[in-house]
Image (cartoon, rainbow, N blue to C red; front, side, top):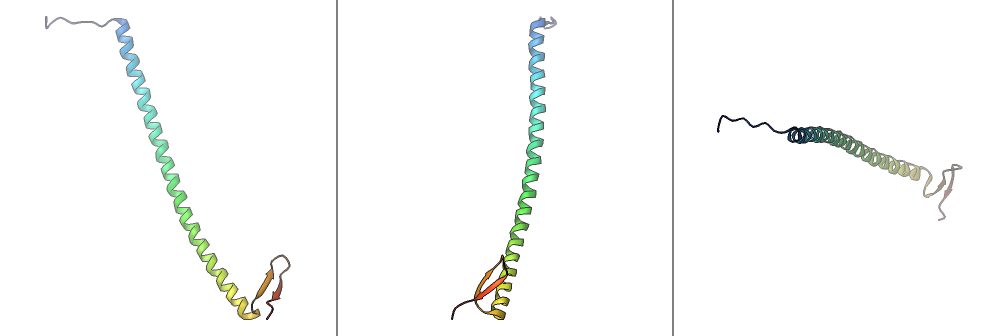
Length: 93
């Protein structure tokens, strides 16, 4: 009996092939999904780096603003500025 070969039916072979085909499709989809995830991770890293750089720029800008306010206060004293007209009103003493 060890020498006897069994041949699957056409229906059984179709089922096997369908399972193999579906497995290949899912494997390909998994690969695509993994690649998309990789791309998103790279985009997130880029966005994170841009965020860090922008935060540094904001901190630098705040320092520039403080320096300018100090310079103008030393020159004109305390008061308020109308940014629309450029008019400065000294504070009441």
